[in-house]
Image (tube, rainbow, N blue to C red):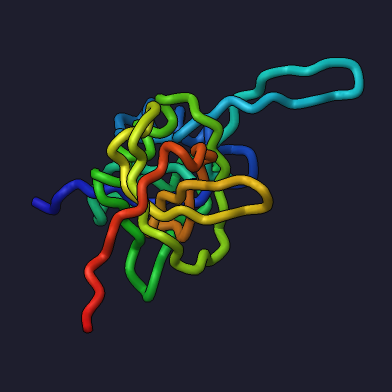
Length: 171
């Protein structure tokens, strides 16, 4: 029997929650990272829950069941790279869950980021995580890459909480 993998489903615009719920109702394991954002209207402010990655839902299934998953209203297609269905490692899903659970401010960015300094978080809710430190404007961001969907999680971490990981240089 084919093994279960986390596949990346692309959904119709603003349909992530509906698609995730419909898939769950049909028995699939689904992960939709949700973050809270403070929105400003002319007359009020309100906390809004939104998908961390616009248009994406992670579905744990077998390759031969992908077509079945796409029968859910709002599902568009599964993401492909080089002709293969994109899959996400369970460890990456766990990292995303951990980051979302901490409640830290997270932005996502689909642009290519030039490799920066490799860093380790030495304090705070993300302690012991490793990634890259980049600068964006006047803030330092810690980057966790989500390779299957070419997305990066940019988390604002105070520089004092980041320690550069020394890499061995060849002579």
